[in-house]
Image: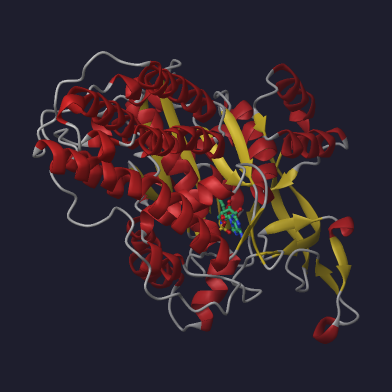
Length: 526
Ligand code: MSP
């Protein structure tokens, strides 16, 4: 298995019953920023995402649309889920679908192993099931329905009636793993993050675990149980395995699995329990290492409520990127929301941050420095003279910001990393205001001082560009070309961003990094 320098990270795989909204895009972007950062610090990095295509929810949506579930899934993957990756600029290394042959093969091998080793048995299941959650429910998870569902028990999350099941099913001996899971949480306190999610899961497991029903026989849209073809596998058991089947588990070529597993899982806090209870229990039963970490991020709220399509608060990612661009989308959600906490989305907030932090803060800084080197030195980067305290302070800050931002990303705090980089953006803007290069330029005797100020500012700008390149790949690549540094900014070592010494020549920025937004989007949703 992998050593410390590999960084394999996953998003949840998304249900294809509907099209993506900004909550889904948020998960994708967070995982992508972490992956790009690690790639740029030289770690053997792998970002996996994909789609969850089995289960009753998708079967019903397909039937309602008069197509087979596979046709429905193909359509949604092609028209909605893969395009999302372009919309928000995700650099994933793989995309797995649970209908992929490689996945079905790995799942079958895994199930057969658990069955042969005595972790699966046949039994009678009686209880409740919510198709919205694709989850078995306890009576305590239900509430009394209202309106059309008056008199019925409904799921507290989806407000729709639960199904009452009485079936012969196969069960996974999850209860056998209760103590081992508690030991895992205790001996590896960082296994589940943040603390709030960890506490909830520890107390859930302490209440006692039941065996888990893992098969259904009343419909057939799923992976067949290998020893009993009348049953299909429970959709969550199927879905969780994507993380290892994508790496080749259960195939002849499991080199990627050996190299990259265990991975870090980024998930919404609503599905952290599946990842931090069922999934490690499954892996323990199979004798495989548990994930490195399960990080449960918060929800995007719109008007104070969890945003969702079913509650008609869903906002398509393109509604935002069409106006602000993918870089601003990525920046806004990672900067404005503390990773691990809920965050409210509003058009006013994104517009205000775009203007203040991107256009006026970073964009203006870049334009001014490039324009002044153009104006005063014909674009040829001059040699710097002896540094003053103010210059040395900028260099020292660039180093300290690099180190602190890198540490913050290592701690899964991208919001802190970005805020730290903005210390340097603000300091550079302040430095230029104080040093007044336009005044120095009026006096030929101060030519060397002018050169030193502009080169110091340029070096700082290069450091900022490298540090925010995982967050804003497009704008920073454009800036990188303009400040004369060749090649791809994505190839720059991020943990040494402060070492960049400037280039020989700068090229004017054709347009600002963050153009003025002429038209405000429809503001009906927030
Ligand atoms: N298919 C399962 C995951 C299986 S992983 C082995 C699933 N899919 S989902 O499409 O419903 O949700 C995918 C992710 O989107 C989850 O992490 C969920 O938390 C996240 N979000 C859905 N709505 C969200 C918000 N409003 N805000 C933030 N994230 C949200 O669950």
